[in-house]
Image 1 (cartoon, rainbow, N blue to C red):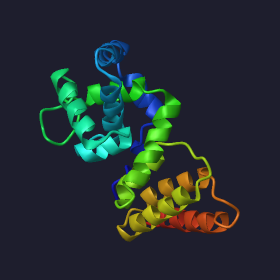
Image 2: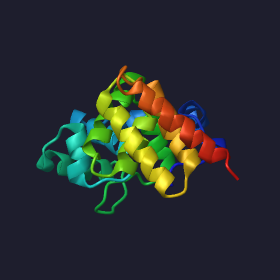
Image 3: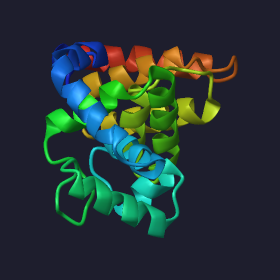
Length: 193
């Protein structure tokens, strides 16, 4: 479905390493000139890639009026596009903000984004793919639902990626056998010509 096939998925570390240090330094310097609301919103938009002001504000824990003001300031600083939907002017700016966000905070933001986007199983599971496992049963269940959707859409390799991530969460003892069974069946389907 929407996940890339296993062979083309780049690790976050590979992508982060591709962002020149000078770009990260420039973006960090630019963010140092704005307030906490703006930094929080920039990090939220970096996690979400594209979002409404309301959604990005929720992730940044800002009320709508504060999120709107922060978005305007980030536009004035040349980081966000002038469009109503929040997104960076360039993917390199987004990658720099993402890379400059401390790993633990980035992981928490991806997990929070997954819950925020839970009505869209694909979007929520993509956020969980980017986060490390912490043994959250909700995450295991969402990843299993996303894998089932991927199988229904004829994308067994995407289902395998999702179920491997569910296994890495890790699931509790009650969920583990079902996750392993689902994973085995998806792996069989992914190798079936």
